[in-house]
Structure formats: structure tokens, C-alpha cells
Image 1 (cartoon, rainbow, N blue to C red):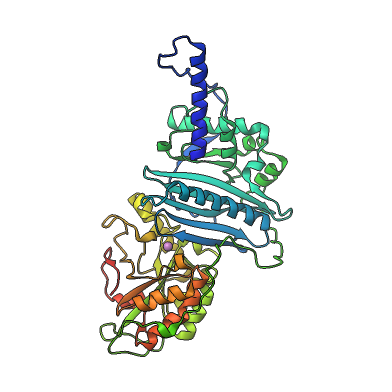
Image 2 (cartoon, rainbow, N blue to C red):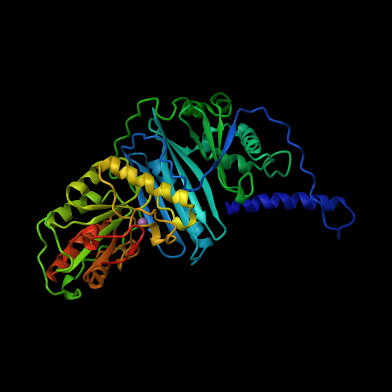
Amino acid sequence: MHVFRARFTAVVLAVNVAVTGCSSGAAEPTQAPTPPVAPALATGATARVFVPADADPGPALPAAGIHSVITENLEAPRWFLQTPTVDGLEAFNTLVATELEDTRARFVAEHPGADTAVFNSRWQLAQRSGPWITVSVTQETFAGAGWNSEFTSYVANVETLGASTTARLVEPGKLQQLVEITAAAITKLQGRAPLRDGETWPAAIGTQLARSLVPDADGDLLVQVGSGILTAYADGAFIVEIPHQEAMSLLTADGAAWLAVGIDEQEPAALPEALEETPTPEPAETPTSEADLSTLQPTPVAPSAEQPAPGTEVDCEAVACVALTFDDGPGRHTNRLLDTLRDAGVPATFFVLGSAIAGNEATLQRMVSEGHALGNHTWDHPDLTGLSPEQVEEQLRLTTNAIVAATGVAPTSLRPPYGAFVPGQTPSGQLPVVLWDVDTEDWKNRNVGETTKRAVTGAKPGSIILLHDIHPTSVDAVPGIISKLQEAGYVFVTVPTLLGQTEPGAIYYSR
Ligand code: NI
């Protein structure tokens, strides 16, 4: 967005320079030319304001074969990147991972060490119909002056194995018209014309809008207009709906085929057989160094106790309890973790993302039936301090609803992403806020030995240990953490058992 904004400014300057060049009084301040009045455009398109971090989960489309790879960084500048991958669609996976990683890296480079900067990228399945799969990626960034939203829609065709952004679905000669229609709809909504410097819009705007298309349930075309593209940043982002017939005239033959199948009207075509494990954009793991358990000394406890049989009540007044907590899942390594916990007879607490539940309902059911506790980690991991109370409420409500729909059980606590929230305002009056006193930094070290060491040496009676079940190294560290702490006499319990009676809205770091 910054790049584009710079270009837009350059256009304004070029116009001013041209005017200066024609006048004789070079020292006088130059006057910007009066923008030509745009002729009224006959369009049925309508606009609405996009609500940042609006957690509308959209239609429930079959997500089999489509996965998320999550990476995050909890130190300044903070970022959270959810990257979609589709089984067997290498071109799609490479395109999406490369673009998202480029954007993330650029944000990090532009905001070195900035405490308030946040980059959040998440995706939503927007279409799965016939051979077409469309994934809409929303990026929300905060850089000290409000939130900006940016949208990119990626399309895969299962038959041709092709992948592109939706920009390829628009006739190149129709890009100006796409901008005119979008601008006219926003003008109708706002009652004033969007920024404009000449007869035509810079070509970059057409491309940018064309990259953000999704079909809607009625066969109309939605243009997702990011912050600062057609209006001031302060106006936020918009969704413009172009009626089906009008939209068809803008599209290529492929684009028309894409819009014609709707979002779910045709049976989804089978995904290609993956020849091998689909490569993922997960960063290279630090070589898994075995934890040298013999050197690790947990804080001693008395009395020491044996891990009781699952389901037995534990009195954390009487024995040294400790709680393992896992954030950001469920993910592709969660079931392996559940195997480990089951074999050890150890309960844990999972702070799940609502947006990660679709397709993983069985994993959540397994958590509940095997004695683990569930917590709410929001719908898609926004920094809650940047949201209105209503948006926070929606993040929590949608997630709780998804957990209840999958398991029949409601989450009993909230863990805000990044541990960030506005005390008193944010976390709905209904749930206790559970943070942690032992940070394994597993998301950063990606190292079994380091993660194990931090958990084992950091734990004290009553500790809450922070881990993430989205990282294989974290899952690999769990057997060592369990055996070492059990050896020292600790007993593993869920967060509700550890904390006992809790106050809604109160903040807990440990027992
Ligand atoms: Ni998290």
C-alpha cells in the first residue's frame, strides 16, 4: 500500500510540475488543476464499508484438502501469518506463499523494532465450485496511525492446475471500467467523489482492485477495496458489489466461467493426487537438537506426587500442579500431540482459533473426550487492543460458537493473541483471561532442546506453560517436558483444575 501511495503522490506532483512549467510566475505557489468532473456512470454497483477484523466466517464451504500454515512473531514488530495450502496444487501454493512472505518481510523491514506495529494476514475460502477454488487473503496492518486493510484473492483451477490472482480474470481493457464502477459505488455511499487526479485512474489502481475479487452467493462480483486505494486511509476499506450481468462484461472467458459457477453451486472437482507431501512455506526448522534431559533441574517440590489416573480429581492445594497450554491450533501436528498426551495420561489446555476449527472438528472432539480443556484464542488472532468492544465481542462469540458447535462444550477461558488486551474493556465479562508465567519461546527457537529447557527450568508449582501446537518442534518437546517434571513430582492438570474458582474478566498468570 505504501508503494502504491507513493506512486499516487507522484502523479499529483507530475501534474503540478506541468502547470508550473506553463506559467511564468515560478515563485508563486502552484494551484492544483480542478479535477475534471467525472461523467455520471450508469451502474448497479453498491458499496458498503468494510469493518476491519470483521470476523464473518462466510459460507461453510468444503475445506477438505485445504490447510493453514501459521507462523507468528510475538516481538516487535509483531506479526501473524496464516498461509493457505491446497493439496496437490503446487503452483497455487508457491504463488500464495511467495506473495504473502514478500508482504510480511516488507512490513517487518519498514517497521524495525516498532512496538506498536502489527501485521496480521489470514485467509478465508471464498469459493469451491467445479474446478475453481478461490481463497481471499485479508491483511490488516497497524503502524501507529490506525488499521489498514488490504485484500488479495487467489484462484486455482483444479483441472488446469493453474493459479493466479483474480487480476487475470479481468479483461485488461476493462480495468479502467472496473475502477469507474467501483469509484461510482463508493461515491454513492459517501456522497463525495473519491480522490482523482485526471481523466483516467492510474493503471495500478485497476490492477489492485482486480486482485481482490470474490464471487458472492448470488453470483454478483465483490470488489474488496483496501484502505487508501480510492479514498483517504481514514475512510477505511470498502466492499463494492457489482451485479452479475454487469460484472460478466468485465471478465475474460476464464473469468466468466469462474463467476458462472457461483461459490458452491457445482460439486467441487477432486484435488490432484499429491505425488509427495505438499511443500509448505513453513520456515526451516532449527535442526531438532535432542533435549539433554540429564542436565535439566526443575524447581524442587514437596510433597511430590504421581500423575493420577485420568479423570481423578486433583487438589492443587496439596500437590504441585502445572498446566501445559497450547495456542493457535488446531493444526496439522495437533493429533500427534494428542497421542503423546494420551499415552502419558496427561491433560492439557488448548487455546484454539475459531477460524482453524472448520475441517478439524474431530480433533476438537478428541480433545474434549480425552479430558483436555478448551480456551478461546479469538477467531483469527487480531490484536484486540486495536478493535472496538463490539469487534472484540464478535471475535469471542464466533469462536465460542464454533467450539460449541464442534464439541458441545463451551470454552472456559480466554487467551488474547499476543497477550494483548485492554483491561476492563476487552475480554467480555464472561471469561477469565489466562496468560502464562512460563514462556517457552517455542515459536521463536523452534528447537526441541531449548523449548524443553525453558519449560522444565521455568516451571514452579502452579505454573502455566505457554506452547504452540502448530510447531512440530513444540510437539516433539512435550514428552521430555512431561517426563522431567513428573520425575520431580509435578502433576499435570488443565487450567480450570489449576485455577479452581475464577473471576470473569480477571487475569491469571499462574495459580
Ligand atoms: Ni497465538
